[in-house]
Image 1 (cartoon, rainbow over the protein chains, first blue to last red):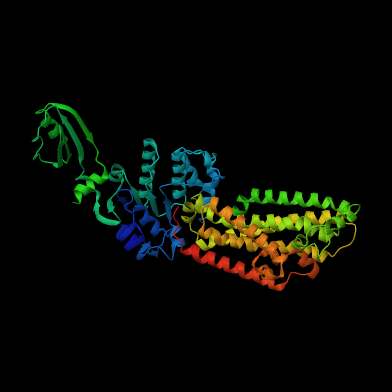
Image 2 (image 1 turned 180 degrees about the vertical axis):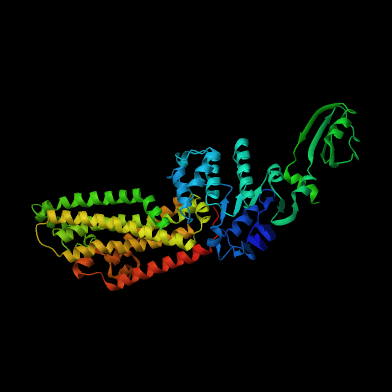
Length: 291
Length: 267
């Protein structure tokens, strides 16, 4: 059985764009990434299958249960971490976690203390006193404490420091080893590359492509900008691996896919004044990849 | 059950605050009764005659006497129990559901295995509980105070009606609060809206008593449904009013369930 099956899911918002004809299948035990630019429809898709918002059209099932009529049953088996976490100001961390656990018919206290230790979360603090990152940690714990079979995470690492991000991914890996399916949306290509088996790319409400991470890995680009002392209109023209080459005054800008060493060796031929090498924005990859 | 308990506990400070205010006010007023009914009685009667007729009618003083214990309770205590109690109820009703969206905690709550119906039911029950708690405590203490300051016997059954009637009227206002909160989620807008509706209803009840031409307005304001002077003179709450309150409450609650289930929750 597929963990998640989404068929022709559409949500129209009237004026602003929602999602159009989204089709997705996530296998049990998979780590599935969901990437796309801001406003592409990642959160809309997730919130529709979780029955927060009503679909205009289409079907969705989680573990064979209908997302729109059997939502309560589904939620017994899933954990959700939204992109922005807001909790009740009057509660302490441990009260919220206990309250969260009370919705499931099982004793989660051991799991709660394990998770809080792993994430270094002080459970005695009041929720309104916590920093954004610490609130995010509370969110992670409340998503995991009832040992769900499916985790739905909307931009889970935003707000976490790099150390915590690593700890979080280790937690996810452990859960995945136990067979937990993970569905997460992200802006950050590197974490998607690290964790996922497959990835769906969404843009302007439509799924552009679903591919395995190995394919995506083979297509990562570096964005390179070189400022030369003298204008050289032919520099890096027809150079293998260069795409989207633009020339502006003394500067040459392009995306490069290949061995960086070849670029560096080529640079010896020129008088280089300045050089910038960056990981490109996701949008830039999309714009090339899906022209 | 978990939800219900949490809601009652969460609102306890507000409930206790409003209860204390109304309680203190009632007790202070009732402690003034002995002097009103005693030495000041004649001067009060004379002063009343100089008031404009409309005002006397509006406060029900043409039907009950301020110098008897029940009439005194009606004029000084009952008025505030209905006005402030009504405001308390409408604020409870209009905030308890919408604050989850306003404070964005609804994202957490809806991710739990719980239906929207269960959420609404728990919150309705919590509001009714708070209203009953408020009125029970106030009524109990007021009753004890009345027993202490009275200087004549009075009809205890009517007093009981004066204690129960505000509960019905406040539940009606709470239901109106619920349906407001479905459409107006932000606390800073639905609070003044709720208070405005309660005060508006009070003013309609005043206008309704001034002229027989606008007497029909009495069907449009819960203050007339549980009018204290009416209850005292008729020794009951008129059934037509009970029916109107029941219908209004039912319509608001059913509409709340239906619309909330179809709503997009966009935190």
